[in-house]
Length: 281
Image (tube, rainbow, N blue to C red; front, side, top):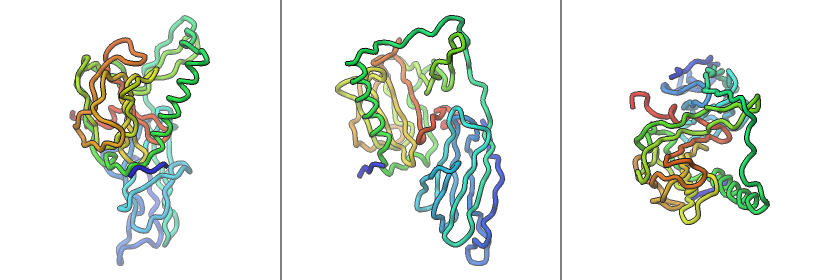
Protein backbone atom coordinates (compact mmCIF):
# COMPACT_ATOMS: atom_id res chain seq x y z
CA UNK A 1 0.00 0.00 0.00
CA UNK A 2 1.36 3.43 -0.93
CA UNK A 3 1.02 6.05 1.79
CA UNK A 4 1.42 9.85 1.48
CA UNK A 5 3.78 11.16 3.33
CA UNK A 6 35.44 8.48 -3.69
CA UNK A 7 35.17 10.01 -0.07
CA UNK A 8 35.53 7.77 3.01
CA UNK A 9 33.69 8.17 6.28
CA UNK A 10 35.00 10.70 8.75
CA UNK A 11 33.38 12.08 11.85
CA UNK A 12 33.42 12.13 15.62
CA UNK A 13 30.95 10.08 17.65
CA UNK A 14 29.63 10.77 21.13
CA UNK A 15 28.72 7.53 22.87
CA UNK A 16 25.40 7.46 24.65
CA UNK A 17 25.85 7.46 28.41
CA UNK A 18 24.07 4.58 30.08
CA UNK A 19 23.07 2.71 26.89
CA UNK A 20 23.98 -0.97 27.28
CA UNK A 21 22.95 -4.35 25.95
CA UNK A 22 23.23 -6.58 28.99
CA UNK A 23 26.45 -5.31 30.57
CA UNK A 24 28.03 -4.32 27.24
CA UNK A 25 28.12 -0.64 26.20
CA UNK A 26 26.39 -0.09 22.86
CA UNK A 27 27.45 2.40 20.22
CA UNK A 28 24.34 4.54 19.64
CA UNK A 29 25.08 5.47 15.99
CA UNK A 30 27.05 3.13 13.74
CA UNK A 31 28.17 4.48 10.36
CA UNK A 32 28.42 1.81 7.68
CA UNK A 33 31.49 1.70 5.39
CA UNK A 34 31.12 2.64 1.74
CA UNK A 35 29.32 5.96 2.19
CA UNK A 36 30.36 9.08 0.27
CA UNK A 37 30.73 12.03 2.61
CA UNK A 38 30.89 14.65 -0.09
CA UNK A 39 28.56 17.08 -1.86
CA UNK A 40 25.97 15.02 -3.73
CA UNK A 41 26.90 11.97 -1.64
CA UNK A 42 25.22 9.72 0.92
CA UNK A 43 25.69 7.66 4.06
CA UNK A 44 24.03 4.59 5.56
CA UNK A 45 24.04 3.80 9.25
CA UNK A 46 22.28 2.03 12.07
CA UNK A 47 20.87 3.17 15.41
CA UNK A 48 21.09 1.14 18.59
CA UNK A 49 17.86 -0.42 19.96
CA UNK A 50 15.58 2.02 21.73
CA UNK A 51 16.05 4.92 19.33
CA UNK A 52 13.05 7.25 19.26
CA UNK A 53 14.17 9.94 16.77
CA UNK A 54 16.97 10.92 14.40
CA UNK A 55 17.72 14.32 12.90
CA UNK A 56 20.22 15.67 10.35
CA UNK A 57 20.96 19.33 10.94
CA UNK A 58 17.74 19.54 12.93
CA UNK A 59 15.51 17.94 10.28
CA UNK A 60 13.78 14.59 11.01
CA UNK A 61 15.28 11.50 9.35
CA UNK A 62 13.24 8.28 9.02
CA UNK A 63 14.75 4.98 10.09
CA UNK A 64 13.69 1.35 9.76
CA UNK A 65 12.47 -0.90 12.61
CA UNK A 66 15.94 -2.51 12.68
CA UNK A 67 17.50 0.95 13.18
CA UNK A 68 18.93 1.23 9.66
CA UNK A 69 18.87 4.67 8.04
CA UNK A 70 20.12 6.63 5.06
CA UNK A 71 21.07 10.29 4.86
CA UNK A 72 22.36 12.27 1.89
CA UNK A 73 23.93 15.62 1.06
CA UNK A 74 22.85 18.13 -1.55
CA UNK A 75 25.10 19.31 -4.37
CA UNK A 76 25.51 22.60 -2.48
CA UNK A 77 25.82 21.11 1.03
CA UNK A 78 28.12 22.79 3.55
CA UNK A 79 31.33 21.31 4.93
CA UNK A 80 29.76 19.65 7.96
CA UNK A 81 26.52 17.99 9.04
CA UNK A 82 25.24 16.89 12.41
CA UNK A 83 23.37 13.68 13.20
CA UNK A 84 21.54 13.55 16.53
CA UNK A 85 19.78 10.41 17.79
CA UNK A 86 17.36 10.39 20.71
CA UNK A 87 16.74 7.36 22.92
CA UNK A 88 13.99 6.56 25.38
CA UNK A 89 16.44 5.28 28.00
CA UNK A 90 19.38 7.67 27.78
CA UNK A 91 20.84 10.96 26.65
CA UNK A 92 20.94 11.97 22.97
CA UNK A 93 23.95 10.88 20.90
CA UNK A 94 25.60 13.10 18.29
CA UNK A 95 27.76 12.43 15.25
CA UNK A 96 29.56 15.23 13.42
CA UNK A 97 30.15 14.50 9.73
CA UNK A 98 32.77 16.20 7.58
CA UNK A 99 31.41 16.84 4.06
CA UNK A 100 34.08 17.20 1.37
CA UNK A 101 33.50 19.96 -1.22
CA UNK A 102 33.79 19.13 -4.92
CA UNK A 103 35.23 20.99 -7.88
CA UNK A 104 32.25 21.27 -10.21
CA UNK A 105 32.60 21.80 -13.93
CA UNK A 106 31.70 25.50 -14.21
CA UNK A 107 31.73 27.11 -17.65
CA UNK A 108 31.76 30.91 -17.93
CA UNK A 109 30.07 32.23 -21.06
CA UNK A 110 30.69 35.85 -22.08
CA UNK A 111 27.21 36.38 -23.48
CA UNK A 112 23.92 37.24 -21.85
CA UNK A 113 21.75 34.36 -20.80
CA UNK A 114 18.94 33.68 -23.25
CA UNK A 115 15.44 34.14 -21.85
CA UNK A 116 13.46 31.03 -21.09
CA UNK A 117 11.20 29.36 -23.61
CA UNK A 118 7.48 29.82 -24.04
CA UNK A 119 5.92 31.51 -21.01
CA UNK A 120 2.34 31.95 -22.18
CA UNK A 121 -0.49 31.38 -19.73
CA UNK A 122 -1.54 28.05 -21.22
CA UNK A 123 1.97 26.64 -20.87
CA UNK A 124 2.29 27.85 -17.28
CA UNK A 125 -0.98 26.11 -16.38
CA UNK A 126 0.33 22.92 -17.98
CA UNK A 127 3.68 23.16 -16.22
CA UNK A 128 2.05 23.87 -12.86
CA UNK A 129 -0.02 20.70 -13.20
CA UNK A 130 3.07 18.66 -14.16
CA UNK A 131 5.07 19.96 -11.20
CA UNK A 132 2.17 19.21 -8.86
CA UNK A 133 2.11 15.63 -10.13
CA UNK A 134 5.87 15.28 -9.60
CA UNK A 135 5.59 16.74 -6.09
CA UNK A 136 2.74 14.40 -5.19
CA UNK A 137 4.75 11.41 -6.41
CA UNK A 138 7.75 12.38 -4.31
CA UNK A 139 5.56 12.61 -1.19
CA UNK A 140 4.60 8.91 -1.41
CA UNK A 141 6.02 6.35 1.00
CA UNK A 142 5.82 2.90 -0.59
CA UNK A 143 7.94 0.97 1.88
CA UNK A 144 10.41 0.06 -0.89
CA UNK A 145 13.76 -1.33 0.27
CA UNK A 146 16.04 -0.37 -2.64
CA UNK A 147 17.73 2.28 -0.47
CA UNK A 148 19.56 -0.58 1.29
CA UNK A 149 21.11 -1.88 -1.95
CA UNK A 150 24.15 -1.16 -4.07
CA UNK A 151 22.89 0.55 -7.24
CA UNK A 152 23.62 -0.56 -10.80
CA UNK A 153 23.82 1.51 -13.98
CA UNK A 154 20.38 1.79 -15.56
CA UNK A 155 21.75 1.74 -19.14
CA UNK A 156 24.96 1.27 -21.11
CA UNK A 157 26.45 4.13 -23.09
CA UNK A 158 28.69 7.15 -22.98
CA UNK A 159 28.20 9.61 -20.11
CA UNK A 160 27.26 12.73 -22.05
CA UNK A 161 26.34 14.96 -19.10
CA UNK A 162 27.64 15.04 -15.52
CA UNK A 163 25.84 15.94 -12.33
CA UNK A 164 26.54 19.40 -10.93
CA UNK A 165 27.97 21.03 -14.06
CA UNK A 166 26.82 24.60 -14.64
CA UNK A 167 27.08 27.53 -17.04
CA UNK A 168 27.37 31.15 -15.93
CA UNK A 169 26.34 33.78 -18.47
CA UNK A 170 28.03 37.14 -17.81
CA UNK A 171 27.85 36.52 -14.08
CA UNK A 172 24.31 35.10 -14.14
CA UNK A 173 24.27 31.41 -13.18
CA UNK A 174 21.95 29.03 -14.98
CA UNK A 175 20.55 26.01 -13.18
CA UNK A 176 23.13 23.28 -12.64
CA UNK A 177 22.75 19.88 -14.29
CA UNK A 178 20.66 17.86 -11.85
CA UNK A 179 21.44 14.34 -13.03
CA UNK A 180 23.54 12.02 -15.13
CA UNK A 181 23.05 11.81 -18.91
CA UNK A 182 23.68 8.46 -20.59
CA UNK A 183 23.84 8.41 -24.40
CA UNK A 184 22.71 4.80 -24.77
CA UNK A 185 21.12 5.12 -28.19
CA UNK A 186 17.47 5.46 -29.21
CA UNK A 187 15.37 2.48 -28.21
CA UNK A 188 17.90 1.07 -25.73
CA UNK A 189 16.16 -0.44 -22.70
CA UNK A 190 16.96 1.12 -19.34
CA UNK A 191 16.50 -0.80 -16.09
CA UNK A 192 15.88 -0.21 -12.40
CA UNK A 193 19.13 0.69 -10.60
CA UNK A 194 17.68 -0.70 -7.36
CA UNK A 195 14.42 -2.18 -6.07
CA UNK A 196 11.51 0.23 -5.99
CA UNK A 197 7.90 1.09 -6.72
CA UNK A 198 6.78 3.13 -9.74
CA UNK A 199 5.32 6.35 -8.36
CA UNK A 200 4.91 8.23 -11.66
CA UNK A 201 4.69 6.99 -15.23
CA UNK A 202 3.88 9.57 -17.91
CA UNK A 203 3.18 6.91 -20.52
CA UNK A 204 0.22 8.32 -22.46
CA UNK A 205 1.13 12.01 -22.48
CA UNK A 206 4.73 13.22 -22.35
CA UNK A 207 5.60 16.03 -19.94
CA UNK A 208 6.68 19.33 -21.51
CA UNK A 209 10.28 19.18 -20.21
CA UNK A 210 10.80 15.60 -19.00
CA UNK A 211 9.04 13.79 -21.84
CA UNK A 212 7.85 10.29 -20.91
CA UNK A 213 8.93 10.66 -17.30
CA UNK A 214 9.28 7.65 -15.02
CA UNK A 215 9.88 7.89 -11.27
CA UNK A 216 10.81 5.14 -8.81
CA UNK A 217 10.58 5.27 -5.03
CA UNK A 218 13.46 3.35 -3.40
CA UNK A 219 12.20 4.01 0.13
CA UNK A 220 13.36 6.23 3.02
CA UNK A 221 12.81 9.36 0.91
CA UNK A 222 15.15 8.23 -1.88
CA UNK A 223 13.77 8.31 -5.44
CA UNK A 224 15.01 8.11 -9.03
CA UNK A 225 13.67 9.94 -12.07
CA UNK A 226 14.27 8.90 -15.69
CA UNK A 227 13.62 11.49 -18.39
CA UNK A 228 13.11 11.65 -22.18
CA UNK A 229 12.12 8.00 -22.74
CA UNK A 230 10.52 6.97 -26.02
CA UNK A 231 8.23 4.48 -24.24
CA UNK A 232 7.63 3.04 -20.78
CA UNK A 233 7.45 -0.66 -19.93
CA UNK A 234 5.91 -0.36 -16.45
CA UNK A 235 2.94 1.44 -14.91
CA UNK A 236 2.28 3.35 -11.70
CA UNK A 237 2.09 1.08 -8.66
CA UNK A 238 4.30 -1.64 -10.14
CA UNK A 239 6.98 -3.08 -7.85
CA UNK A 240 10.28 -3.67 -9.64
CA UNK A 241 13.54 -5.40 -8.76
CA UNK A 242 17.03 -4.16 -9.48
CA UNK A 243 17.75 -4.83 -13.16
CA UNK A 244 14.09 -5.03 -14.26
CA UNK A 245 13.32 -3.21 -17.57
CA UNK A 246 11.61 0.17 -17.09
CA UNK A 247 11.50 1.85 -20.48
CA UNK A 248 13.35 2.75 -23.68
CA UNK A 249 15.70 5.67 -24.24
CA UNK A 250 14.37 8.46 -26.43
CA UNK A 251 14.35 12.22 -26.97
CA UNK A 252 10.88 13.26 -25.75
CA UNK A 253 10.35 16.50 -23.88
CA UNK A 254 13.11 19.10 -24.00
CA UNK A 255 16.03 17.09 -25.40
CA UNK A 256 18.46 17.69 -28.25
CA UNK A 257 18.95 13.99 -28.97
CA UNK A 258 18.27 10.49 -27.60
CA UNK A 259 19.65 10.00 -24.09
CA UNK A 260 18.61 8.94 -20.62
CA UNK A 261 18.68 11.62 -17.94
CA UNK A 262 18.83 9.89 -14.54
CA UNK A 263 18.43 12.01 -11.43
CA UNK A 264 18.17 11.08 -7.75
CA UNK A 265 16.70 12.99 -4.81
CA UNK A 266 16.63 12.31 -1.09
CA UNK A 267 14.01 14.59 0.37
CA UNK A 268 14.91 18.02 -0.97
CA UNK A 269 18.56 17.13 -1.69
CA UNK A 270 19.82 16.36 -5.19
CA UNK A 271 22.41 13.57 -5.35
CA UNK A 272 25.07 12.52 -7.84
CA UNK A 273 23.89 9.17 -9.29
CA UNK A 274 27.50 8.15 -9.94
CA UNK A 275 28.15 8.12 -6.19
CA UNK A 276 25.55 5.41 -5.64
CA UNK A 277 27.26 3.07 -8.08
CA UNK A 278 29.98 0.61 -7.13
CA UNK A 279 33.27 2.31 -8.14
CA UNK A 280 34.52 -1.04 -9.48
CA UNK A 281 31.64 -1.05 -11.98
